[in-house]
Length: 110
Length: 117
Image (cartoon, rainbow over all chains, first blue to last red; front, top):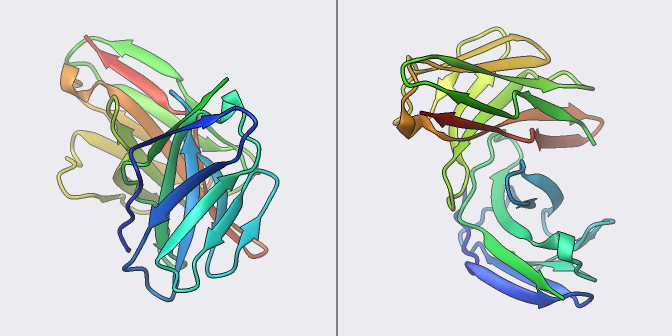
């Protein structure tokens, strides 16, 4: 599976949009981009995933560049409870296991 | 979404003893489950893939005789840390693979914190 690169940490003001970038320049055509987050001392929580089109759900939006080499997870109105480590993972549809990189530690501040 | 539970949520044991951790898929059947380990301030590291009715597949560097995995049913996988030592103290997380009507995802358990004295 392709490797991903994320900034180690980011801050965001409460109520503002949090934009978390992810580079995956070696992504293959059959690989999806997944985002999970892990709040302290809990298991990872699925957020969203996509192949090439932008996606939106009740938690977040995922913007994937046209060349698919990078993506951005957007939390439209960050709250203090969104403070967590966010993981961007690239995975083939036929590959069941999920391998985590270092992620981005997002801190939402009042 | 699908729910995965783990038991216990935390355990403290003496060095040399064995500890069993359970991972259950509560509202779905999972032919494949995964076990991860996470040390403080580090990311999750995949330890092994657990397949119902067959032997687990271990990642390189993970001792299969030390970390025994049993996936005897479609809703339960167990990880037994045998002869635990302080360096085995970690946060152990399982996940279950869920496939239904086009949804093809992994759902994670809440984790088990193991402390070996």
